[in-house]
Each structure stands twice: as C-alpha cells, then as structure tokens.
Image (tube, rainbow, N blue to C red; front, side):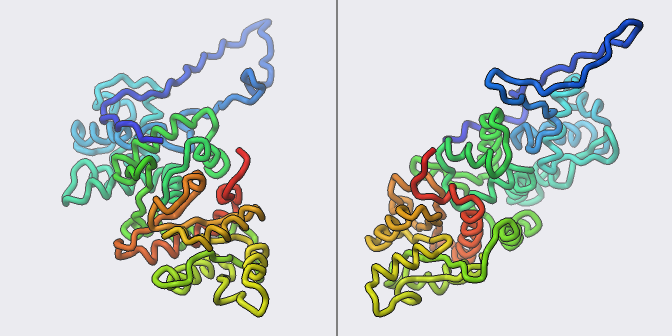
Length: 382
C-alpha cells in the first residue's frame, strides 16, 4: 500500500460536498413534514449522513490543511479574523461547506484555533512549521500535527515500529478499531499516507511501508507509551493467573532479551511471563511442557530473529491452538512471507533507545492482542 505523492499546499481538495436543499416555506395546505428516515443504499445499509465538518478525522492532508493558516500569516500578520475574511486571504470565495471542512481539518491538526464563533487564527504550531526558528522546527511541527490529529494520530500510535498491513487487513482495523466508515477507506488512507510522508513518519522497507517510531522524541503529552498501555489495560480483562508464553532462542544474545525485554514488558501488561527453559522445564518431556505452556497461555510472544527452528515449531503449535501471538523481529527477512500479513514489531539494535521502545511496544501489543485477538492470529479466515 504505497503512499501516493504528496500534494502541494495549493492543490484542490478531492472531497465532493453535497449542497443542502433549502426547505420550502410552509403555507396554507402545506403537507406536514414527515419524520426523516435513514437513507438506504442499494445494499440496504444506511448511508453516512455525517457532515464533512463533523468528521472524526481531518478531511484534508497535513499540507493542504496549512493553506489557510499560511494565508492568514502572510495576508493578516497572523491576527484573528473571520472565516469569510480568511477565505479572501486565501484568494477564494467563501463557499460554506467545502471551505468550512478545510478549516475543520486545520483545527484538527492543531494549525488553527477558534477564538470565538466564526473567528480563527493560526496556532503556535502552525507558526513553528511555517516560520521555523531552528533547523528542526518544521519537521517536528509536522510530526506534532500528525500526532494531534484525531484518528490519524491513533493509527500512527497503533502501528509505530511496524509495517503497515496489507490493504484488506488495514481496512479491517480501520473499521473495527478506529471506526472509520467503509465508504471513507480510500479517502482516509490517502490522507494518512500523505500526512505521514511529509512528516517523515513512514518509510519504504522492501515491498512494505514501515511506520517510524519517534516515541522517545515526541512530546509526552502527545505520545506517552505508559498512558497508551494504561488505556488499553482498562479495555481488557486480565485475571491474576493469566500468562504470556515467550517463544525464543535460549542462547545469547537473543536469549538475554527474555530478562531484559520480554519479562518486564509482559509484567507491564499485567500478565505472568513464562519461557520453557526457565519456568516450565521439569521431569516430563520438554515437548509436553511446551504444549502445556502454550495451551494455558492467554497470549504468546515469538522472537523470530535468526529463524530459530524451535521457535517456528512452537509457532505451529500456537497456530493449531488458535492463540494470539505477538511477533517480534530485528530483521524483516526473518519473518516468513505467510506471516507478514499480521502485525510484526521490528526493532533496531543500533537505535540507542531500542530497548525501552521495545518494552513499551511489546506491552501495548500484548494488550492489543487481548482486545482484538483476530489481529494477532497467525492464520485466519478473511
């Protein structure tokens, strides 16, 4: 799902806005208005009647949403103005719906603020982007705007450090997790890709696109891993004895990640960590012990780096038991093609913050797998 080329700030908005038909004045003999019914499409489903200005995500890309604050800065020195005045600064006629939708998008990205009804002015974030004072202001401003945007910011947080899934699985997540209407898939995905591209939050990785993790550099108010973990934790039920089974090599250096990464991540998610060699090895057959550990676990983690055969054997058992699994790897080539359709956490040991990032991301994905297990099933019917 390749992001398309980013449009410039003066490109035309693609969303078509339907005009509202004026109501006729009631007179003698006029029929009483009947209660409005939900419009139905040919398939029998209710059509979306949400106003473009009331969308739960920006209806324009980040660059497009900068057009109005830029015009106010250049034509009005950044001072407060009316919506109609701002249209004249942009050089267009105020046309109600479409222009109001563009204002709404800029507000959602944190680029405009309402000082009072029908009056707006650029925010400090818009000035940071449009009139940067340091070399990093523009890029950091773009990233703050992405994180601030409803739904777009949430989708970024959900997939940071991961490849975006194939289109069908991405669309499923948009509906089930982020409540994006089916008829808005293409529009949302285009806006998401264009906005993350200009903010350098998405990069090509082979035939996939990976969402860049900036969790250690983002403002804590916008991207706080602990708050995300707490929020997810409230949405799932975890009992005192619930466990997470870790499938990974035992030998160093990967074997050392159990105590340094996976144990603290699992405990942070509120579950009990288990690994075959340390926790369930007994007098019985090791295969029996592993089977019991996998079968009794509520969720599992698989460290796929270096393609350890024992790990893939245990993955087969997890598949047979239809268990949700959090996949982790430092190398995309180590993830088999038939597993790349589900979420995989990628980490880079050359990143000085990789350990803390991975702990937080694993904890989040454990809770996400408990909340939406279908996202973490190895093979599922779609």
